[in-house]
Amino acid sequence: MTYDGPVIRLEHVSKAFGALRVLDDVSIAIPRGEATVVLGRSGTGKSVMLKHVVGLLQPDAGRVFVEGEEITALTGSALADVRRHIGFLFQNAALFDSITVGDNVGFPLRRHTELPEAEIRTRVREKLSQVGLEHALDKMPAELSGGMKKRAGLARAMALDPSILLVDEPSAGLDPITSEEIDDLLVSVKRNLGTTLIVVTHNIPSARRIGDTLVFLHEGRVLVQGSVVELEASEHALVTRFMHSEAGG
Image 1 (cartoon, rainbow, N blue to C red):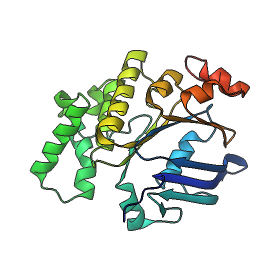
Image 2: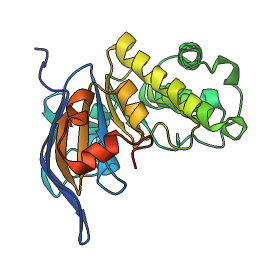
Image 3: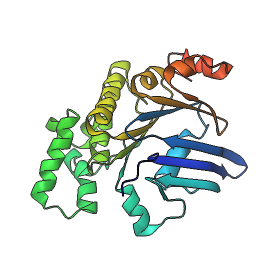
């Protein structure tokens, strides 16, 4: 039986590091095939929320569900099975410096599948072609620009054709033109593959391009949630300032 509820659900999730409560009773439901953009000032728990979704962190209280399955206490092979359906594009792309771009993209395929090497090489070329990096197969990460590293990181995150893609600050360190190109790639992934996106960003122009739903976190809580139009009409002064800024904090 196919699960048709929210792809990701956080129920009353709280997380503290020492005396600092980073998430405070957060409840969010992420619909399938849409892009949810998480906004907020630095230190408001955006990236911590992503890490809960992929099981890198466990909540102090509350529960996390992926495709209807509670993952809050999963470990080992059970958690690895869930992660196979989730791609994660880290803020700095997190490429392995000592291997080529092609081997970076092929890494998840070699680790999590038993595909023959010829098929892996074919898939690597396909993924790099999708992000406009087919020429960079044999390059080392140090030879790439910041935007090219983000593209390579996206190709690696999509290597296993995940149904869910988590993206942490796709615009960080990029010029406006390159940032827009990365945004367009993410929108095409959602539109063409039906991938569910959760994107953390400070960048309001980027949020407008990508987001179907925007979630504004403040001091670890969901302050407001809705479409771009709904957040622009918000009566919260902080949300208004954020939405009408160029960079968004």
